[in-house]
Image (tube, rainbow, N blue to C red; front, side, top):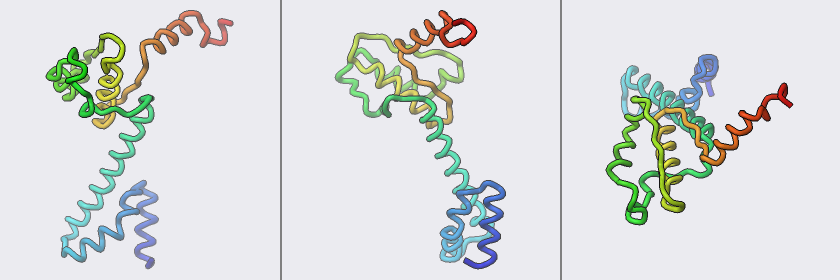
Length: 157
């Protein structure tokens, strides 16, 4: 690595441009090989940073959501669970209900895929940059009971 490369690495670290620092040598070689303009090279560097930040954000949002497993809406078997209207689920994929501040509740007997749909929709939301928290109805009731009885507050022992 030459002095200029080192200065670029230091500048990237100082500016928190980790993806640029990581991809700079490869992108610089591509720019030479493809005879790119400086502006095209700069755009590729910035896009690499932007994409890495998007990936990190998605990973963080997915981890924070607390899904018990990752389920995709594309993997849901609508033939098996005939009670789930496919068009309604497809409409939910637009995430417009989030913008309208509406709730979505899946009701039905055990084993028809309510959890799969909830996780799939939540995962899709995290991939769209929306903060999600997955909680089952049973866990929510327990949390509410603990809060109501003061079990979570040390002053109420």
